[in-house]
Image (cartoon, rainbow, N blue to C red; front, side, top):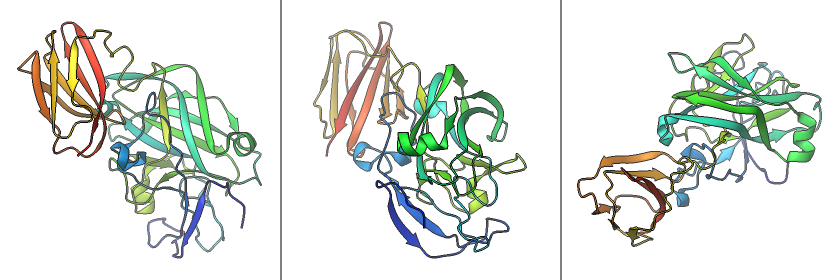
Length: 322
């Protein structure tokens, strides 16, 4: 058995995979757990990768092996495998994060499996437009190239793929890792444990015939992939939103239930974002100077509130602690 990095914890569940269709159960699942997550300040991350203490779903981050028994040790569900898969991809809906459009300057990928042998290949990240069915379709841009050897010995499983210029994305898009130039049984992207995911049908793979398929249909379980776009404009809730004015009072913080908001300026729109930047609530404010919001039904964690009006926008981080 090959050696893996020290931050990965190996747990083996003994079951088998039907090699012909990838759809029959059960699958041989070897789980390799990692707790390395990207900062939320500039990166789109599905809530499935965020710890529950920070308002996320707290899904375990793993890699599953593929063992079809013929051949033995036949690779990885989210990486190089006996089926000669070309790419693995994660879909992002910009509106979920409160944006109309974004610019991406790099992609962070967490590789859960990196084998020192057979490491002469290289990988790239790609950004795709989606077709009418929500599948990756037209290629928008390709990143720089990283050698598998460099990933193994220099980056320790976490890689940054950079683009020459910021990539503009509107509405929805997909970000992929292309390992078609790698040996089989070499490399795999970390992902959430089976059936722990943010949005259904968001992870994809490209087969050796260049067709795209949802992982939930290929492998009969759902997951999110650790492929995270990084915004070129810095903060997740958009650059320049934080007001320099000191005329707003927001208390108490941490908040148990009722949050009081008082301002000498008039704001007519109130929004709440999760820690990962997902727009949870957006509503019109009728009491434009002073009002309250009830957080009693919210889970403990970190949130951002945004006020918008004629004088601009104001963003503040708050903590809900029941």
